[in-house]
Amino acid sequence: MIKFLFIILYFVSILSLIYGLWTIVPFFYGLPWVPTAKDRVRRALEMVGLKPDELLYDLGAGDGRIILMAAEEFGARAIGIEASPLQYAFTWLRCFFSGSKSKVSVRRENFYRTDLSDADVVFAYLTSDQAIRLQDDLAAQLKPGARVVAVAFDFPDWKPNDFDEGYLLFAYEMPPEKGGMAAYLVENNEEVDLP
Ligand SMILES: C[S@@+](CC[C@H](N)C(=O)[O-])C[C@H]1O[C@@H](n2cnc3c(N)ncnc32)[C@H](O)[C@@H]1O
Image (cartoon, rainbow, N blue to C red; front, side):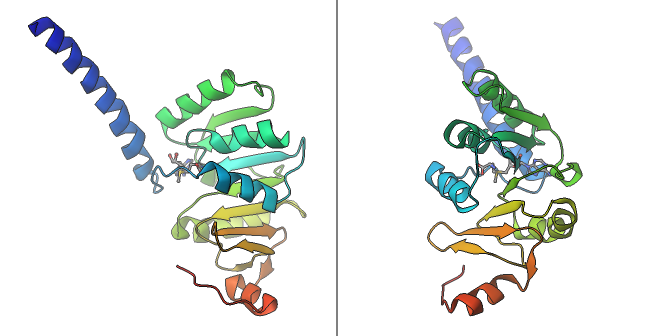
């Protein structure tokens, strides 16, 4: 009986350790583990008109749901950039066993150092600080016509060319127009309740 209890305790400890690392490590990179709901991801990829064989990058791949949906539902090629080792390993396994193995991959990398010059679409679920830090690099690196979709936080200097108030999604086309969200609202004569 005691031996059985020790075995249970052993497995509970291992699971707690894995869960702890899964949730805590992303914090050290400044972005907590918060996955995007699948219907929101689908809407984001529709907003930027992701096409078959285009190349999408997800900045902070998490559990790989964005790159897998991009490949499986949109026929795109997709690369996840993920700094946290557990999320990276999990996404690598999901890609390896997926039916779209040839189209998806994940890199253990800091997205501030990723070369995104070949991207057609960038999916970005960032904090507002990260968006401010990244916006000049993205504008300099991305080719004309590339699209960026931001979840929850916008890129403050860029005017979105599409905005979904319900899902709080901001879509941009490169090169970005200046003016931020205010310019979008004035142009579209809209009133929205921003958080
Ligand atoms: C908010 S989650 C988003 C996951 C996924 N993109 C989604 O929308 O479901 C952020 C992810 O980014 C990763 N991350 C945070 N900072 C990073 C960095 N500098 N480079 C690469 N990945 C990072 C975290 O480990 C976490 O898995």
